[in-house]
Length: 172
Image (tube, rainbow, N blue to C red; front, side):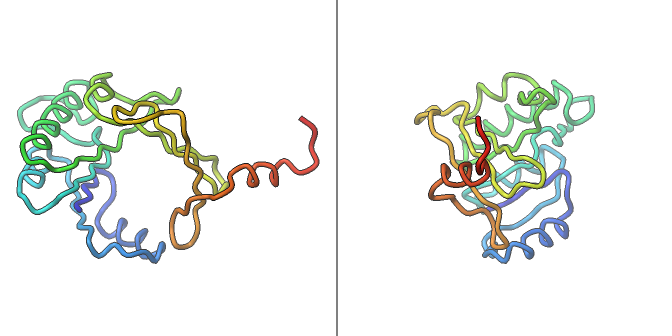
């Protein structure tokens, strides 16, 4: 597995992984914003999964414009799709969202991918909601409730109990 990070250094990623005390031995990290380098990693045959965080940080050498512009995001998405299909590597794209909660950049991103999931939570809370807004291979009618613990995210077996406990004796 390769994590391509456009916003954090490998040292920052290592620090976060160390805090979670999980097994990250099989994950390599590359701090990269150059699209052609990321495509080279995908096509190298060294990885079965490449996660890109975030697609809006990539820039192609063949286009003018800053990372995150519509043209750059469109080019990055097209090249990553081509590389994934030709090499058989699973590519996970992390995308930034707008203030209203939509995926930042061209709508093309949503059309290219097999699944769009959102990962939501409130500041200061330990629970997160994972939900699919698009899934070519399954339902979008389910959600996952996760709790952040010292050892990472853990699935909550009884989400109703969490919300009932938070509600307490309040009416409503």
